[in-house]
Length: 399
Image (cartoon, rainbow, N blue to C red; front, side, top):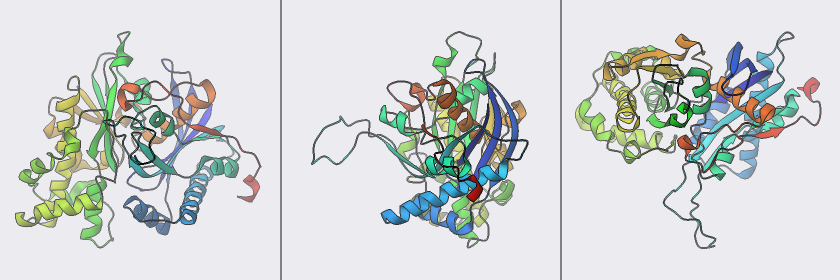
């Protein structure tokens, strides 16, 4: 089955779209990557999304308009990716996360009009699937996180099960490290043993590119949006004292399952980091080097604290995998492992997350296969992920 996977991550760089041929189920899962593109958001829409992610209030009407605008751009990404020879039969759309709140696990559910604190998590992805389905005339699966959250889970990360069946090695311990705006890891034991799937685990490790990108934008008054290849940071010297202080933040020490987002590692967090740094006489390059080292150190700390054992290979994906300085720092920090990218083991590094949501949609639509791993998210049981939307009216000719 030909499936398009769509996602725009917390970096809001654009809409990653991947067209893949999917066969099999779980143990016999096979994919053929046919085509991938990153479809850019219009600048005004990107700025609006980022403003909402950082807490800008919206009226219900404005929220509805933003929801539709994102869905239309996701549909345009589908249109751009397809050709007469390559037509999708199904779409899996993660949408655009604008808010994520982990569950309050210490609370017991109560039916109480005076208790306004929900023990369940909350995660909002805009770009409604029913509009994408009708604009493209292709069945669409969306809203992947809600079922896991309803079962008491974090709703994130959702790709570890896909990672397990695409990237596990018969004999090597691997860690798949996504570095988008936020970082997350999937630990993959060797898959030659019968019970290997029960040992797969994963969680959000902390900031990925989010703080670095924000700092670059502030330093350049918006003329640059990221540190290409990490070359700016590479010309500086990280302040180890600050990184050690920042690692005392509660999230890093929290045991998995755990998830996070820009709600924690966003503008307010960066401003606090800058206040901490004011007495250190850092140059701009030092500042970026220190923020980059925080991402590296948070990954290393997470591995040493929570992985069942250190991996032999670390497979990077996401935008941060293109940051040569970050990659070199991670290799220096975790010398016992070989730092690679997923492209080097057969899964395109630029579109791995989009491929994952194509597979999650396929599992939901084609075979009713649960897509979450309860050990990863904290959900009480495996769940079917995503809402299915069938096109009701052929709007394709009017799109």
